[in-house]
Image (cartoon, rainbow, N blue to C red; front, side, top):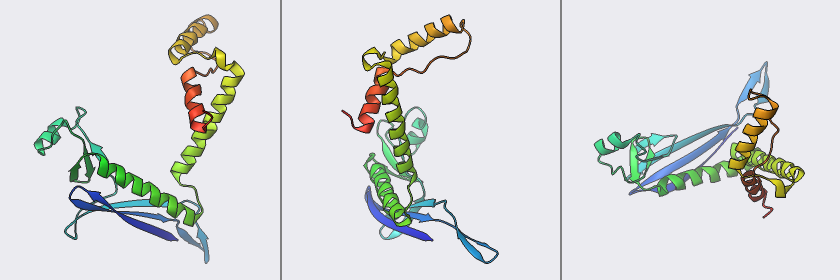
Length: 192
């Protein structure tokens, strides 16, 4: 089974036609059609100018000079002090086009996932992050929230613990929660 959606997003003076395809393969095993539980996602981004596709790729990114692309950007006549959205060889100034394309992809993935009655990777990741945040809050409560150390103080504590209990060698160091990890976990699960 295959389902697909397309959206158009402004890409500078052009249009980015974004298509997301979700499919699960069907295998024929001795006359029995078996539907795969694995969902394959394909993204296609076409840059359209005057009704013609001038560039096609499956990835959108932000190009900026972080010391990596400086020479390449100057050679292409781009200002290394600016950020650009890029699909293949097509480039437009600013990050808005990239962000809008990524947003469109996410929206279409979510809508298509409902049709497949499956969780997409971003939903699975979010659920895992919430689970870890809940475990962090429970661990912090066991330690006593008032006893939590900052990340830097916790690093000092770990070194001292290791020197005393493991004689400076590698060994067991109990897991402790930092104030920052606790605060991030509370925000993640919406307890604040």
